[in-house]
Length: 442
Ligand SMILES: Cc1cc2nc3c(=O)[nH]c(=O)nc-3n(C[C@H](O)[C@H](O)[C@H](O)COP(=O)(O)OP(=O)(O)OC[C@H]3O[C@@H](n4cnc5c(N)ncnc54)[C@H](O)[C@@H]3O)c2cc1C
Picture: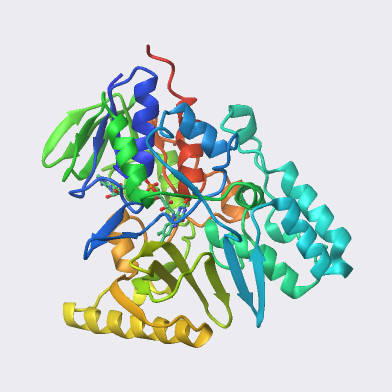
């Protein structure tokens, strides 16, 4: 079976590796000059900065990602790093909450601080534990849990406590998002508390480890797929740089809205499907500042005041913290600007976020090395509106089951951050679920 994969980001590389291990020799088409998509890291002044990977849960021994990476022999090539103490520090309405590396400790800490809510906290954690197992077995992902976080949090009355719990929606949807899918929330929440790790070398190290493992995959860079062809038997070819190339199956890790635009014609059912996909709501867009901070920052700082802003430390460099400042931003404000107007708007927004961060916390000097706008994310992912995680992981959108690896076009499959969920966990889970559709070919 001849299989093409559209996209050489984390998900495309993972799908290729998993297919290889099943005996296939897929071809990856990547439109950019470099593999890695959003996840990659970059160097300025010989300093390594992280873009789309800072840390992840489920990486403690015997947890989901640890086991999956081990199974793919990736752990031989990667070094996991534990946080020294709390991995996140939350600043919410003038109070500080440290998030320890243990779900039990976090629960006890919250029960002490919000003693009137002790029983509700106990119940909330129980429900999270019940749904926290990450599994790619068909019988587990076919059952759709349509509960929102709001449904499950209904007995938590204290506003500040609700906000502490809602912090964890930032990792897969948006800040304080009560309509988020509870199913994915529980998986993120428990697996982060019990297994958050960084990876030495950041996202770039993950991409290198994957690339090194792809011995039976053809990789075509600077190769944008512009059309997909089908007949009554399903997918049969794609168009790249003017050449029509035949395939038996295509896995697209590009945004589903982008992918479905590549068909010249679709039948009635498929047109309805496309219009459902086009209507899906996106996660918000964001602004990043890559900087050196003259202080040692050990935990990820989240400030939830009037506007959300976070400071994510990556590593130390000559006594300074290499960090990314992340804040909300708007794609529409950048979309149609001239080069000059874009540059001015970007500088102004960068200064605005810097001023805010300095007001919120006494950091010492911050040296800005680079910054990126929602248009930058759009450039790297070719997605929709520069959204941080692609399709919004809301309870409603996930329970509609519009987006599953198997699509309404025969032999076209979806993988990537838009399908099951974003991030390292989402990419692994999506690729593993997809493999249920490809028989062992060895
Ligand atoms: C600022 C930020 C911080 C993040 N932090 C974390 C974190 O700390 N931990 C975590 O787990 N996750 C994090 N994430 C999420 C994570 O980075 C993404 O979910 C993940 O990298 C998505 O990988 P992907 O392969 O699905 O998509 P992408 O990286 O978008 O890859 C898609 C690829 O497809 C290519 N492509 C698109 N269209 C075509 C076409 N027509 N032809 C050929 N190629 C095409 C694109 O060029 C791109 O390379 C973060 C994301 C962002 C934006």
